[in-house]
Structure formats: structure tokens, C-alpha cells
Image (cartoon, rainbow, N blue to C red; front, side, top):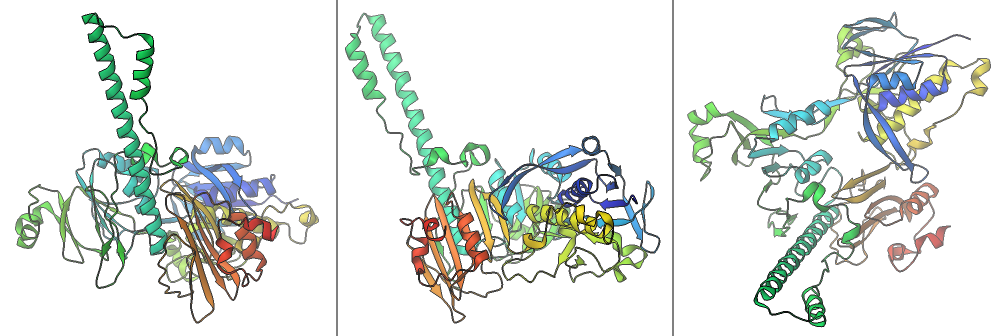
Length: 552
């Protein structure tokens, strides 16, 4: 039996999942991971939520731990220079490596809006360490972007003024429409106000108890002693203050002080007469600049020479190291800038030796793969953020650069390579099947925002449907219908849960679940089975009805 050599470029989720999955399928083959970092991303605590949905934690492991755990996997810390396609050789600064099969899982890199020593992108451990070091002495920063990283940073960063520039008219546009975003931030306000109220009540109780103890001590000194019954009655009266919160399930909320204890978000609805979009004001530490992008970066030296900067800074007398000018003309001084504007495929290794003319790339520079995750070159595969999947025929699946999809693609790529390696051999019928293209039938992603569990299923945001629906919810079931027979039903309980379903011709094609709804498995099945739900209408979201009873 021939022993194959699989080389995996990249030590991220897709790369390590591909290597470990192939190692499981073909334990006698050799697997080599070429990683630019000795720290590899590993997946732990995997929990199956439904057929397609799963949650897991991402940890960092030393490459030696990976080698110890998988005897047929070796890790080489190196920089990949180029690929000799004709001779099947990967050239690196640590030497050349010959392969039988190659899996390119080089991931993506931050899509920096501009180049500047004062501008950083957030992508890996090194950039997080850099961010923490810069924040230690920062008074004001500028965040550019409106995706998941930007949302998390806004709520994680403390004791620092933030100028938040977003190109959209509402927050969280990369994941949510304006109604879902409105729910999240109004819920966050309620929870934060409840936490603040509870803390104030606790402080008042402590102060009252201290005063009581001081009075008792003073009375004892003066010889005025209360009998036991009077003391008990006094204690009961003092401690009868209510501990109720504005949010009735606050004890079950994970928002708490861990991430946002120093933020007390005050969300107020402002009305924009031009676009009639809802807007949100956080506390005084966060200044949101809507519908803007970064126009220019000025250094401190430029500021002294540029009257425009001086004239536009108003009462800000701070001598900042850099100044940013936004597209709306506003200028802000800051210590540094965070570019959280997404990522771009890291396919630069293909630009060497004109390989980019042989291996087909998408317009954004991603490696195009077929239904077997194979590139346009024989024996070369790709997975994760660096690849482009254009073969899925499912109406309710689309590619998005997420941890969950990187893991799925890495596992499926390993399966495809293993299948190819035993094709037309006696081992073909004995090979395990750990992954199939069924996992590309339905978009499914589980995550968290502001402590709320978030489940995204199918076309959860109406991707590609051009809904243009203006839903105005009043905490009741609402729906809108367009000329393409697409209906949208929503239900929200502020501070607890938000549910949105999208039906096309009576069939469920997408759902967004925020909070503990326990509807993910039911809605997943409804999307996959394409049951006609026309007769149920808005009742499908009636909280008084156990929808699972209908479709068990």
C-alpha cells in the first residue's frame, strides 16, 4: 500500500482540521503542516446542536502538542515562498517539501483601510497583544468597521473614548438588519440599567446596614440597648428593600461585568429626516459616526501645518499623535486606529512563479474550488477563508468567512483528498466517511453577541432576496409581503429574545434567533424539509404555541 504525503499550508482552523481529519482517515500516510507560527488553532468542546449546527471553543496549542497527539503529523515553522506545480514541491525558507497532495489553507488577512504605523488590524494572537499594549496608554481610539470584530471591540474596550466610523445607517449591518440591531441594543440598555439599579440597591443596603451597626454601637456605648425583638424588627425593616431588576431574567444573563461593567449604554432613538433610519447613542465614551468612511490620516506634524485640522477640532486641545478625517468632514485626534473592515483571502503565495495564472482565482483573489474542494490544478485543494466555493446549488447556503465554515471545509477537504487517494484501490470501500457535502446544504452558524445566543439559519437576513421591507414592530408578531411572495414574520420580547423567519412561497428559507428560543432544531428541519407553512401564517411565531408539537 502506497504511503502518500499530504502537505497543508496554514495552521488555522481549516488547516489543522484538514490535517487532523486526514490523519484520522489515513493514519499510515504522512501529513506535514507548514505554519508561519508555532501556535496553532485547535477546536475543543464541540457540542452538536442539531444536524448542521454545532458550537465549539477555539484554543491555541503549541505545534509540539499537535505532533504528540498525532504521530503521523509533523509541523514545520516556516514562511512559504512559492509552489512548484510541475514538480509538486512547496518552497520555503526552511527548504523544499515534496507532496502527493497539497491543501492550501492559508486563511485571510485584515483588509486594512490604509497603511499607517498608527493603524492596526485584528486577526491573530499577535495583533491582540499589540492592541492590549497600545490600549494601556490610550485616551481615544478610532474604530473603522461594522462587523463582528467591531461590535465585540466596542463592548470590550474600557476606560477609553471611542470614535466609531461605520459606512452603514445602523449598527451591526454585517450580521443584522436594523430591526434586529435595534432589539440587541435596546435589550442591552435594559440589562445594563437593571444591573446598575441592582448595584445601587445593594450599595444602599450596605450603607444602611453600616449606619445601623454604627447606631447600635453608639447606643451600646451610651447604655441604650434594644431588646432582641426590637433588633429583629429593625433588621427586617432595613433589609426589605427590593432587589427587583428591570430585566426579569437578569440572573441568567452573561452580559454582566465581565465585558461591559464600565459601560452604561444609553440608547436613544434619533430621527434622521433624510433616511428615516433609527440611530443609537451609547454612553459618552462612544461617538458613532454613521454613513462614513476613513478619508485621510494626518500625523501630529501635519496637524501643526494644516489649518483645516486646527479649525475643525473645536475645543479639543489635546495634542494627539494622529488625526483622522472622515468622509463627512469631521476630524478627530486619537492615539491609534483599529481597522475592523473584514478580511481578504491570503493567496499571495500563488503570485510567485505565475501560479495565479494557472490556479483560478475569484475577483477578490480567493482560490476557486470545485465540489470536491479541488482547485484547477490536479492534486491541489483548498479550504477556509482563502478559498471560494461557487459550486453549491443550495438556495439556502452561502459562503461566509466564519470559524464554523472553516472547520467544515477543512474536514470535508480531508475527506475529499482521502477519497481521491484510495480511488480504484482495495481500500476504497473501507475508508470512513466523516463528512459529506450535506453540510453545504444549509447555512448555519451559532455565535454570541452581547451575551445573547445568536443562531443564523439559511437566508437569515434575506440574502439575495432584495426584501426592502420596512418592519415596524410593537413587540407583536408582524409581517410584510412583497411581490415575489416572500413573507417575513418577527417576534420580539425586549431583553429576552428576537425571532425572525423568512418564507418564500410558503416555505421557510431563513431564520434569525437571538436569545434562548429553543427553536433552532425545529426551524432547521423546516428549512431542510421545505414543508408548506402557508396555512399557519404568523401563528408559526405564537409564543403560546409549542411549534415543535406541529412538526414532530
